[in-house]
Length: 128
Length: 141
Image (cartoon, each protein chain N blue to C red):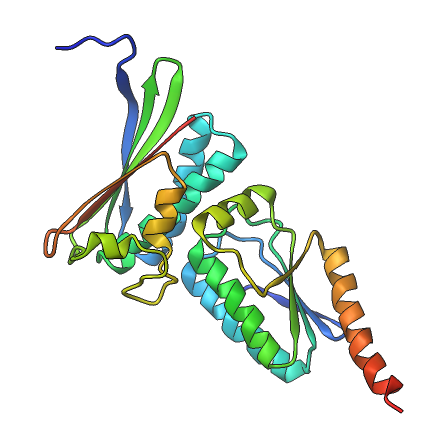
């Protein structure tokens, strides 16, 4: 079965969506990613959509779901690489992806996740 | 026959089947190509493709399959793209309700119809219970 690969980089899972996703593939990613978070004990998920030429309400809902599910599994999601035309279209469509963290590219997204991970461990260390 | 200074012409037309889920992806790719042929900029292309994706999904999931009929338009120097999404499904009993943000009969977010309407220049819907649904969207360059 066709699947979107999930890469692991330390405590972060990295997903690069490079195909025009059909609905079943989007749902499969949701299942695979939550399973992988639990299996690896990951605290961060980075989703790169720089190759996506469009995000409709179905794919948008999948992204919002992944972000909410990850949060419940103690992992933060950062969505990176959204094209400006996609952002304009999503907002006009009525989907603002409230609650989903974003960054402009993979590098900034990783920094953001790393800062969150360091901050979390810093709290533990600083708790005298 | 009435002659206008600029009469609207259909310069090219075709049909794309909407039977199964993978047809939604195929429809998106075709609408992207047609939007480029109509000379749309990247934002307009994205809006038209996204609207088409929403309506194609409606036809496949709720309309039990149908067809996407496309027309490339010319009116003087202006070019446009018109898409008809036609299904023989159960139809929509309350169109006003179906066009409300957040209202859904299925598993979606309820943004399909209302969202698609906001992404195009013209939006028409003809539907009745048991009569199927015909949604027409048009976008001009």
